[in-house]
Length: 256
Image (cartoon, rainbow, N blue to C red):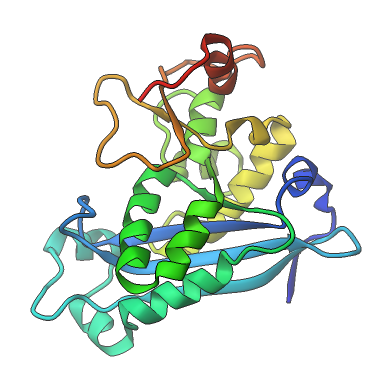
């Protein structure tokens, strides 16, 4: 076990409802989950210990083998530095990756919260992986709640909104990095989420609410149980009454 923070109070709001926070990230062979696949899946399951500290109780970082006969596009290798040879030699089967991830999102006495930056993208690919390789994992995924830190970040800072921008804005550059490798991005996401929670205690309001650019709409299939809402850019941190969850609450209903 690794103690991440001696003061678990920073996530009091979330641990009041959830037994674990699972931070996760994927690297993929392309952008379309119907034709492309996960090539790296990383996650950390964080729980609050009896003494109140935050503890990593399980983690994973798996390269995932490509389907027979497939090769990575050059641009994916350039971005991630993952090669066909790495996947062939060190990659696990999609079933092994799916079963390991399922172990991390297992239910306990309370629900689990899955957290990702641009969670819509990662959840689409992860659902396909679990659907094809581990139905029990798909059921666990669908029973969880979701927090998209990209949606939160759009209410906090001006464009651009990549994870790398959040690392810089919160002064975390000396501690973590956005390397486009899943395990590095998970570690960065944990620290960014801590900084967000310390900045303003409203992360719980964003659970199961994903903002999208109204110019482009929602790409791919929507995730069941999530409210999708158009989210416009702002040049400064929005006031508490202007954040996206408040807009959704005031306008009511569902907008796909």
